[in-house]
Image 1 (cartoon, rainbow, N blue to C red):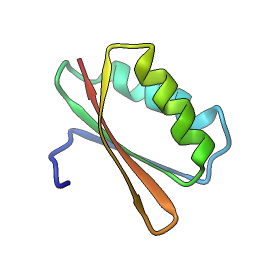
Image 2 (image 1 turned 90 degrees about the vertical axis):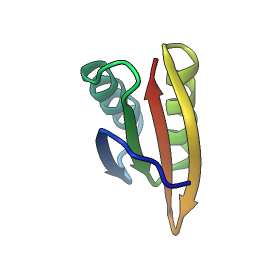
Image 3 (image 1 turned 90 degrees about the horizontal axis):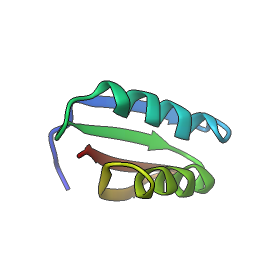
Length: 77
């Protein structure tokens, strides 16, 4: 899925809870309807970010796996 995004985070193999914290901090800085592209390596980071999304005004637009990285597209509502 090719989509425009306003910000990007490449968190690689960072340990939890760093990916979730950085994702939340970045989303808080964005405007409503902006999209953030997040790249993480760990499955646990994906799960933690999914929890973050479900507990806040964010929408998960897409999740894909490219090589050894997960790519999440998140919209701020």
